Length: 329
Ligand code: SF4
Image (tube, rainbow, N blue to C red; front, top):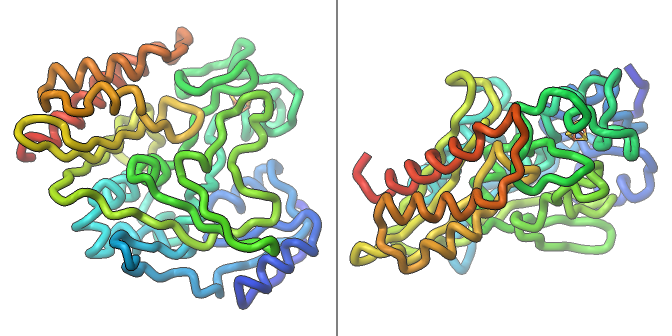
C-alpha cells in the first residue's frame, strides 16, 4: 500500500483550491472504485481530498423542468427517489442492475461516472496495458482473452468496455455534467464526457485536471415518453454487462415521435446509438423497424473471435427493449 496524505474539504471552493494546490491529489467520494484501485497498485495518489462533507447530495427540480442530482447523492438514494422512479424509470433500473446493495449505498453519482474499466489485464500488473501504463501494449489485443471487450469505439490501443450502467442511462437521457474548478463552472453533456480510447486510452474523460463533478442535470423528457433499461450478463446479479440498452421512446399514432438510445457493455464508452435513432425517427413503431435500426447500429462493430457473440446479442437486446416500450409489460 502506498502512503498518502488525507484532508477533508468542507466547501466546494476549499475542495477545488486544495486540489489545484496539491500535486498528485485525488478526490475521495464513496471510494468504491478508487480504494480498490489503490489496493491493486493501479492508482497512487499522494493526497486524498475527502469530499463527502460537501453539500452535494440533493435532488432538486430545475426551473425549466428536469432534475438536478448532486454529485454526492448515493446511487441507492437516487434509484429510490420518487421523482426518479416515476419520471426516469430507466435511471432507477440502470442503477439497480449494477453492483450490490452495499455498494450502491456507498457509491455516488459523480464517482459512478468516473468508474474505470474492469478489463482484467488493467488490474493485473504482470500484463501489458496501455490504459495503466501508456505505450506499454495491450494484452487483450495481443493474444489475450477478449470475450468481455468492446466491439464499438475501439482503437488499436485499447478495446476495454466502460463498466458503468448509470452512465449508459444518463447518456440516453441527454444528461449534463456540471463541474467546478478554480477556473469556474463548466457544463459537459454526458455524451461528450467519456472519451473513446484513440491513442490515449489512459485519458478517459473530458474532465480537466483539477475539476470536481458537482451535479448531473436531467432534462425533462417529452410527455408520454416510456423508458427502460435492459442488461444482459453472465449471472443475474453482481456482474458487469455483456450488453445493456437504455432507451426512452415516445410513440404517436403508431410512429416513433422521439427516441433516445444508449448501449453499454459493447463499447469503450457509453454508446449513444445515433444511427439507430435516425433510422427510427418517424418510422412505424414495429418490431421489424426496431430490428432494422439495431442492425444498422451494429453494422460498424469490429468483433474478435471471443466477443463476436456480442453483435447479434446487442441486436436482439435492442430490438426487444424497444418492442417492450410499445407493448404493456
Ligand atoms: Fe489495457 Fe485496454 Fe488493453 Fe485492457 S483493453 S489491456 S484496459 S489497453
